Length: 393
Image 1 (cartoon, rainbow, N blue to C red):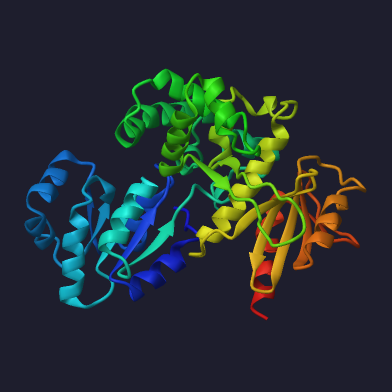
Image 2 (cartoon, rainbow, N blue to C red):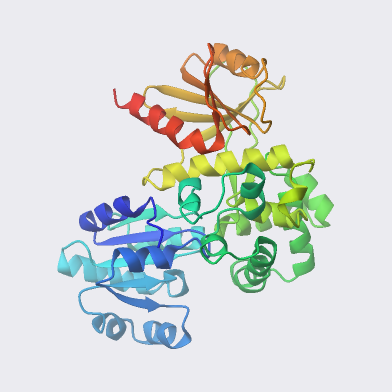
């Protein structure tokens, strides 16, 4: 079994709070993580109709039969139970009571903010990081990463990615989308999701997305919210600073798992990646998602953004810390070019708080240049850890 990077943070927070809530995409490993970390706790899956009916009809009796605590899986299925958990925590006045999991981001967050504010720590578990993926025997070859992604089941059970991701998407559409978004035109929704996959790394233009999908701007906005709520896509915000530059204000669109994005744009085997016109965008998605996992696995909130001004000057990823900003440029090529740092140097003149410059590229060797570092994708974790250590000085 793979020990997840988030485990030490999960154990520490459980000691310090009555509840810990773990959210994330379906099949990201939430249940496996919690059952391994808290093997002494009873496990209840609220997707099971009989358990859900018991919790809904007799919440006090349901909690009473759990004794000193439990893991409650898919808690968003019975949101009313959170109010009874609040009373229980206030009566017992202790920590380490219940572990809650859920796969619907906004609905669960709203319910928690109403009932368990101040009583639960909130963690987000995404699919495997590259280090976790490597522990399954998966290779670090870039095209393999972009094709197969990081969902644990694919690598734990050596599944064929195209089949597994296709099943995942169809199950998601048929199950979660109907419940979360009340979407009736599933064929248009499927087209919309595929259009999103074709726009990874681009500014989120809802009018264009809606027009191409054959729906209104309002519907496109609602559907994007559904995709965010169920941990399929996320939006990277633009950096904002009070400087004399007109900065882009629209976010950029990414998928939590690059393998799912590859499947949705029609890639059927890893050999197609090398010559695919969206290879650069998929590589960028992989880097951004890896930085996000690095934050979440340590219990941190996202501090990520990108920089772009009205004239097109851009930095793909800004990683803020207490002492400055790490600026990261993303290049899919395997050969280091002499102009890799040109844009980073220009952005650093606009943002003097930039304290480090890094290019993440598709090659395998790490290089130190006069203007900064060049690192392969598997070396990103070490770079982010250095950014964080510099903030502690």
